[in-house]
Length: 443
Image (cartoon, rainbow, N blue to C red; front, side, top):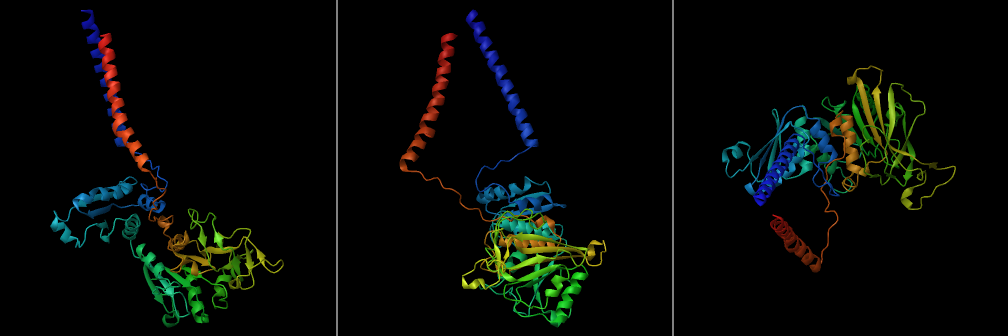
């Protein structure tokens, strides 16, 4: 009788403990479903979105529909990508479609290949034909714009050409702008007689020949009316006819080359406050800001400075014999990029507020340098700021590197096999047998 009571007591205790554990697990599961939290401990953050992607997703005001057309066995790949986005916003609705099973829907969307993603917001639609965070984020940026902003590049003065695919060209700049939802065109101001009415951002990229006074007046008038422009200069290309535009807002392009033109720290301006990648300027003029600005309504801010150990080389740096000459060369830090903003007349109306970004170098984003560290990111952030599109100013997604690889010898592999496949299961079984034997003896 005594043994029976003890056995019953053990049974009841086991049942109660099991119910308590089950209750705790159920509560944790319920709380987890309501308050999800992801942790990414990989060195390359392989399972997290880039800062720009997160910023774009969190800034969504309308519902965005993502429809993926993949083979059935590719669904986990699609889910892994889109789940990173839905984690940050409930405005993203996802639909997976196997085009082999839903032929009608595939034809409706004119799907021609697997791994096609359709991104929609209202009547705006774009597609991505690869499983890429960078391309998916760019697609969301495109559909998120109510109108397609237009960027014009001036031509006729031996500027960088957006059609040029050679090392010195700007074809990569053009493609990057298009991927972020901009329409990219070029314009001959002398022929047009004015900046096109649909121009959102005007870019003057590395002119080698001077602008006529009439062209300079066209650019200045565009800025005075609240236009946005970027000017990229080059060393040893002076007297371009546009210097007076810069001086009227308090910016002077110096006749010197910046020695050691690497920028790794930035200020607090909106363009660079999230810029953590270094930028490199092969040959750059330095820019100075007037101590007393000629127009009190316009603010000028440095956005990229060299280190204090740099200097402005007044001799040609191309000879390879650059050295600091006391009393002749200026010591760093030197401004390599500045931004100006404000109303020319002091009108508080935002529509009259001009924006201007000036770089002392145009080669830092040519086809050969665009992908270097943070060069392309800084350029695109500058264009976004000029277009007053703060949601896209951030660090853009890039292809993840493979990170550190774990190299294992055959002996290491055998050891892992013995531990995980043989010893651990035996230890679990052994502990179970031990508990059973102990209870059998004490029962």
